Image 1: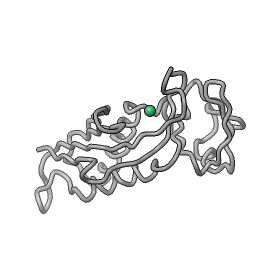
Image 2: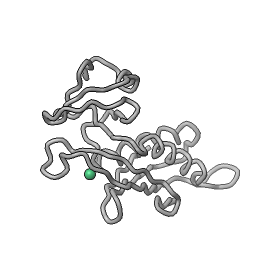
Image 3: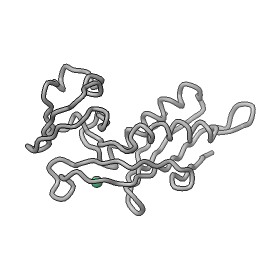
Image 4: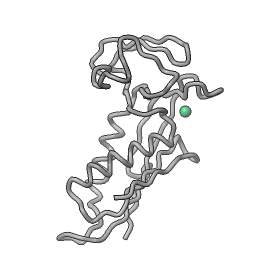
Length: 171
Ligand SMILES: [Zn+2]
């Protein structure tokens, strides 16, 4: 059986800035009011014969939304983003988070921002495609800690109403 959680109606939303380096129109920092729909299929199980408890799905998804909300999303592994004093090959992303000010170039343009204003993601892009994969994998990992009856977790990250990308993580 399948359960569905509607992001708008369940308040699974976040508002963030991002940039798609090298893209003609999306290569400038701009923002979206995102919302996240979740679909999970699995066997009904446990005391209440749930597929999964809605409270868990909404709570874990909201936690990811809150982490990204009101920040600039930076895809650390994008080839057009270069950081000062940070080696993508060797250094941990946690080191970027801790910096008071992060200096970087996106497609040759220079920025200096407080580390706390940014979220550094281990992704090549912060497109709806990559964000949906990030959400689905993070949520699937979290749910797998307590559920062993799930077949897949699919997440659709919408960049506003009318356009989104969905990624399905099989378990
Ligand atoms: Zn955008």
